[in-house]
Image 1 (cartoon, rainbow, N blue to C red):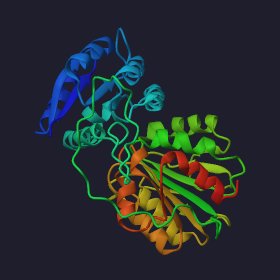
Image 2: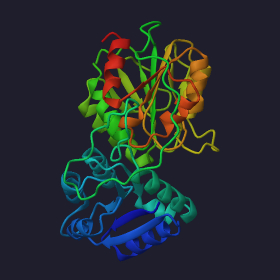
Image 3: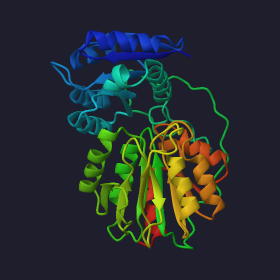
Image 4: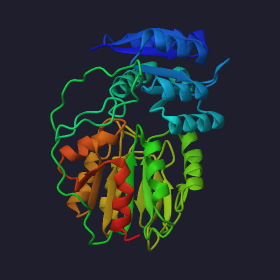
Length: 368
């Protein structure tokens, strides 16, 4: 099946470059390009793509305004093309809150990373996002259909190939005992919005620290933590080397470095390390989960949310072997059902839950 793409960017060079990188894959086709938001909305009506790559800074109509209109009238997967500057980070976070599924950093595409790696990442993101459960709901096991995009959209989803069913969860609720003493969360594609849905629903009285790895560039993680802090009752911050862990505080791993659980203080501390450099992701959910499994002596509650690939599944398995409580986001609410699926298929998940139910599970477990 060919994925149909609309590329939107005010730079002719970027439009041509993105088109070439995408169309090097036989299953990807750029059906149109647009120079700004106004042009993009016209091309959407004409070409009915499966996914849009969208620049943020454009004349006539910028990317955020265009994104709002797309989500209101032509809801479909959108991948932002974003600057790695502070201003670009803020705009990208706005875009993710408005409904964009993910982003690619513009500078990295053509300067600091190999073109081959960026091309592979771009192609894989487009493939996965174009068939995201967010826009292509699958039937429930009982046969009932999940809610579809708004009626009347000209971009009707195409049928998707069936996937083999993942093993079912072991239970329908988290155990109440033993009460966890540490909360750890891993997420990737779709994670910023998922975390923005979960964390504000947690009271300030959360009795444990929370460590989070979200795959993000280094320039994005502090603005992201600051944004969450403004929305949440718990304190949210970018993790700093050596700081003691405190109950009611959420520590976001900085981009480009691993977040580990350290034992240099009585109640644990943040350890930041470039090792292992061989890890596919930095920060890595697996690396964080594995450090907790190796170093933490109390009860752990581990949560894995939406994301491509399998980062976190191996680490969650190790945590489960040590007796941790484990939760995975269910396919119906995931932007990409990759990381949670990998954990479920390893048989190390106690509870598979839609995103909207996870805050309730956490509140009940921690008796909040």
